[in-house]
Image (cartoon, rainbow, N blue to C red; front, side, top):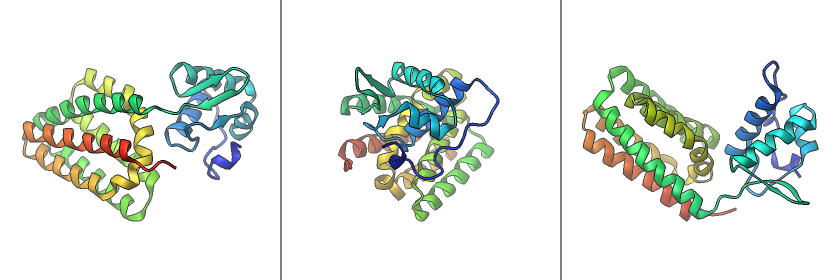
Length: 225
């Protein structure tokens, strides 16, 4: 059941105003990407509506949109289910992520100033503390913040737009391996900061490529369950 699969307090009642269908969509997408709603989980319209404090109509519209975008599977006579990504889907996305992030790291090394580097260091400290505290949700969120900051420092709007399109799916795939990657991921982030600080474009590219490849391999080697 839905209620058994959601942590207490994971689904706040939606605040108004704003288009209801959009707010329901955003709320459900967040629950999917954070895996509060797990791959393969049955999504019952009436239960979702009750959790979100809305009628079934905006939930139905949100599920249809999520189906179009590949987050939800609508099965005839069975209902809606959170999509279960295949190994090939994950591999394709994480490979594209490697290409985008490696170029972002190179550009960040060329363009980042002291304030940007300080921001990366602060996020790294935040992530390291989250790992030490065993706070997986914060680890995932801070990892996304760190990579988004590198992308911002790159200063290429087209690259940033492309990265934004894959960012939520990266979070989706990263969540189940965040604990396994653990401290090592943030050691690699420190190496990246050093390369960016030294304005070493080649080294920054190499570190980021290796870093994202480690995550891709860990995903494929993860323990399912």
